[in-house]
Image 1 (cartoon, one colour):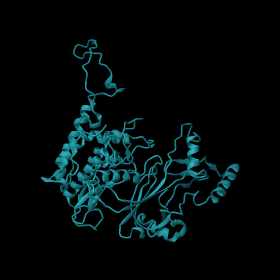
Image 2 (cartoon, helix red, strand yellow):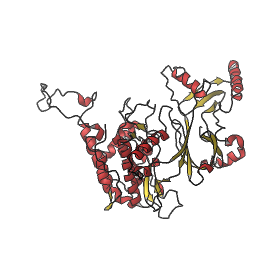
Image 3 (cartoon, one colour):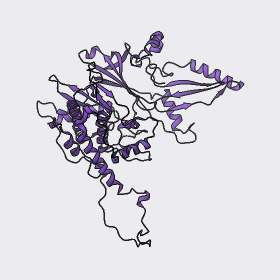
Image 4 (cartoon, one colour):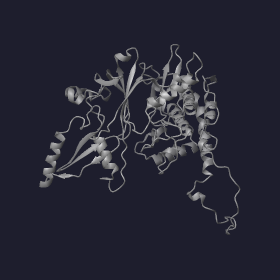
Amino acid sequence: ILSNAGLRSHALVTLIDRDRIQLSYYDRSAIIVSQAIDLTNADDEIRFIAMLIGCHRLTLKQRGVLHQIIKDPYITDFSRFNTVSKDPKLLFSGLEMELQKNGENITLILGTIVYRQRGLFGRDTCVIHATCTEWKDTKLVVKISWPSASRKSEKELLDIAIAKANEMAKPGETHWVLNHLPNILHEQDFKFDDAKSVQKLIAEMVNGGQYVGGRDGVYERRVLRITVLEELSPITSLRNDKHYAQVFVDILQCHKWLYDHPKILHRDISMANIMYRKDGEGNVFGVLIDFDLSSLIPIEEAKSLRRTGTPPYMAFDLLREEKDSGPHLYRHDLEALFYVMLMICCRHSIIKKVQPKGTSQLEEIPANLSEWFDRTMSWNILAKVKTSFFSDNEPLPVSRCFEGFRPCLDFIRRQFAAGIFERQKEPAAGSWKALEDVFNLDGRAPLVSEPQKPVQPFDDDTLGGHIDYGMFLTVMWIFKKTELVVRNRDRAPVAP
């Protein structure tokens, strides 16, 4: 609805059921459906005609068409649109994007779509190949996303990290972490907060509690953010298992440095957000990308209405649907990194025949851990599936080509299992397990309550001391008896 016809801020859709018609409004934060118009009713016929006239008078911007940024393919050349729409990757191919930099216009020529996020609500991230004379010697991608207006931008956070790295670097040297961060060349926001914007009117209506079934309405304001970046290579284009191991260790170290020094927590580690670059000598450097959901610690910004992360890679604690599932902890990102390793090693194998450069060299094994990717499953059920995975006796279905990762994966799995077991022994307030025992099961006689011995509180930040950076680094830095490159050896406990 929002992505198959070009760049759209919102969409208007007509729902027809025999002689009844409803007008629906869609954007990335809300769906609003009008009352049904009954065409057999004389009064409703007048409403229908009024609706047609009103829709006809809408400007392109009011219809959600952002023609001033990308010449809309649906409008400029409908015959071309009909052709390229058969291949979604070609939707923007050959079109021009107009941005502004330092008061001057810059034009990018768009290519094929590299990645498109699925889902109606949320950021709707789209990454596209591009070229531009402004950066003619650099391979580029353009990222189009719709993040919450309350969050710091990716460039703001990376500027903080880069400044800290330059401050910590030795004279005449480049800090090692810069090899593991994306290179943002330009970022531009387009806001929809003027008095007559559709989004502002919708926000006022929803936040005012109108037309939301009598419940309190909350509308999440968003901005259109367009980011121009240096192109990187997806992790799936690697063919050597040692290179995968090095990338995983690089991401672990970079993530820890970001948390300890510029105080940035990523909060969305997934397979799509781990990439790599190579230097002139062919050395592989893992790169952690997509800081749209990241936050400075302590988190002071307004919380998004939706939890952060990609469900198959989200920590089981964060998937629980309780009203307050707790804060996003450092160890939750470690858990997400473990899931990335797990999915690479258990759901993929390296294709024997070398594939074209830059494309995936992995063949998916969809049967393994398939329930983690079941989009019909609720987050609460997925949380239970993941928790039971750690106590399951079944061995990991590691692919033969990634067998070298099995010792590491098994060890981390055992650590999570031990931490979960210990936490279950300390019942949470409000749980039935916290109720006092009033019967002696041996004698079936009432007990006299005895004062309990003081117990040290469970350290949830590290899952009882089982999950931290030091443990991960210890089991990951040697792969198949070979030492990997380690740059961040700080094993001090992370700040709470």
